[in-house]
Image (cartoon, rainbow, N blue to C red):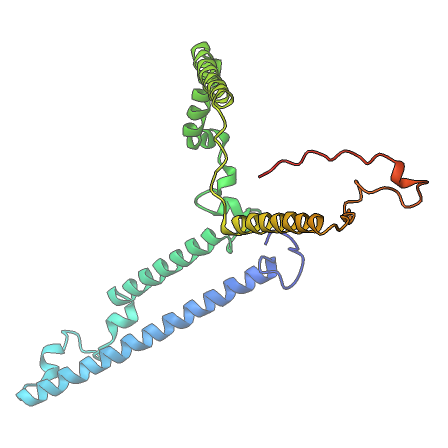
Length: 256
């Protein structure tokens, strides 16, 4: 709003401001003329009503209105003189105009030549307030910061913090030591049905092999070499005289 004053379309251009003032003055004159005509019409209607009432009563209306001097009776003397009725209207128009100007100054629309938008307003914007007011608004935050600073510089607070940390670390070490000293829980002796079934099948297969071997010896049959499926226990295929080579020892396999 405060730039490009030289443009013809700018609302605060000098020519536009003068044009607006002329239009406002013209509108005010037209409103006054309408009010004058309205008051004249009301007075005429009132006069006609009084005349009709006087005729109905049978009295002469001119007898009470004839002045001492012999001249023409003017029923609109008060209106032409511009007495009370017109004064009230002028005051009303003046109040309306003042209210309008105050509103336009408040929003920054109406500014006189050489006057800024801030000077025309009754109250200054927040960014014109000094920093002291900001400090008063932030007094609560300043007090909190002061308390935090005092707590930080207080040696007793540091001692309390150190004691709490020491107790917490001591409790952690005690828990770790207790875990190390306590024996590990024994493994669960319960086995599932599948494990028990697998063990039973292995035992049955072993017993069948033993029985078969025993009956074969009784019949004079030579025992067949067992086929070794584990690559770690078998001899090399390209080895010279593999029958004379010592077989590797069996590794320990824990029984579950």
